[in-house]
Length: 307
View 1 (cartoon, helix red, strand yellow):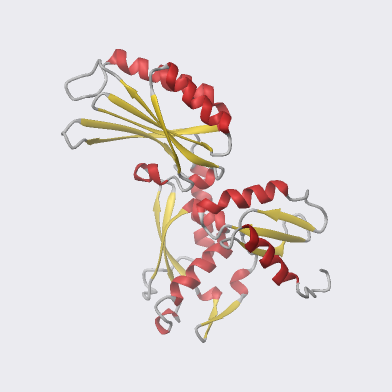
View 2: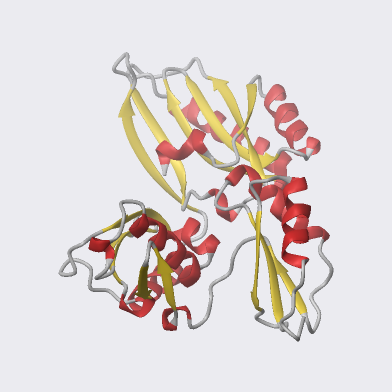
């Protein structure tokens, strides 16, 4: 394709991809190590991401001409471009951002501003904002680091440049801790205490193939007046958790557990197409007297309240 003449190839590519799933999209651009990049995108749909990942696993090895990705990648020099939308020509270099950093959850809330947003239709500014952030951060970068995206007409509250945005993410990346857990507390409807321990950061995009949620329920009888386990019960629960996690190994991940009213719930994620991972959890839980429940959950919605 060095001539730039694609012929009917774009239509053929779209038809082939639609035959797999109409929700998938494709894009090309300059590669990082190869001349060109072909990306298959799930368009932010976590349920389709595993299909894109499977496509990538089946792709040829990168060579001089082509490399491949399962998500749209950042576009170098995008701020030098002008896009036309709703009859308006927007210089992307004029965009500014309002940034709110949540260091605990390692994410950003972003308000996007462009001087021409006030002249656009209601949907236009948000559409531009999503496109631009994908181009600056890449599809996975947006999913990984951005919690909320909004728009603003007030340039006084949105003064950060794209460089400030990428610098904020670089800082969070540098400060990110692996295997970090946070402790949270609440009460049940019966006014008993609930203790939750959850992994930070808690992001499905870091494990896009782990789309099966497995809840393991472990009962304990030796408990305090507030419903939480005694010291001996707690030691036993920790041992059970360690045994199940060891049996699962790298086939999945424990992301949270919650304890209240005589029961501890362990929340695991694994590959829904890996029967061995599912069986490992079930077997280890059964040995410990626990019960398991499996639910498809590619976007980790079951544990979003702990994020």
